[in-house]
Image 1 (cartoon, rainbow, N blue to C red):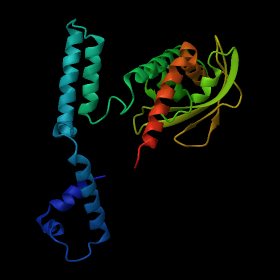
Image 2 (cartoon, helix red, strand yellow):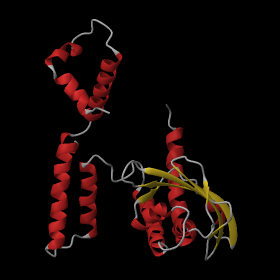
Image 3 (cartoon, rainbow, N blue to C red):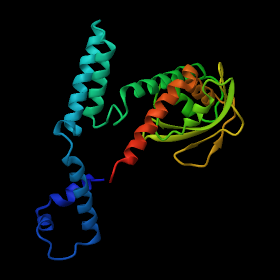
Image 4 (spheres, helix red, strand yellow):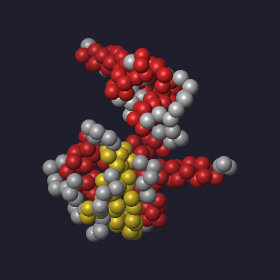
Length: 254
């Protein structure tokens, strides 16, 4: 990361020779600083000027003020218009509001499942969980289901009176710091009307050691509620679309 100390270090005219053709091997500190500067310049090279920190924040502030004033003045934004504003805000601060290559119909199925999980977690917020912080993030909607999830075992249970499947649900959890990555391994008993978890389910946060989850854990129940949307057809449609895209990419010649 480029630091203010790096900039101060090289702001002195006495450092100008460092950017001239090299006549000797630079010391380790100088080499490290130069490497950081080159890396930062390389990163910023392809970012539009108005998406860099200063310009991006100005764009974000303007859009937020416009949306807030509309709400304050009784002009309620249509859902599609508000969605575009929020997408623009994310772009302005250098974040992507959508996933590259995720088809709109597949994204809609994922969003529907995530909405079910959020609603269920909100209704379960007072119940016990091994990871109350995760339960809270689910209830606030501060999560996304990741393409690395392994869900296709559910396909075998669709339309059956009963069945069993071992699946992995990978989640990106928003946090005050870096995004947290959570994998929840579920042993699922499925049926036409109800899905339940079996003993042996567990979860891991950021690759740490797995923690066992009781079948009646609130996080488990919230996830199962979302995955069972339309008897599992919503999430398996999305998982199938993700798998088909990955297979297509792997099949492309190098």
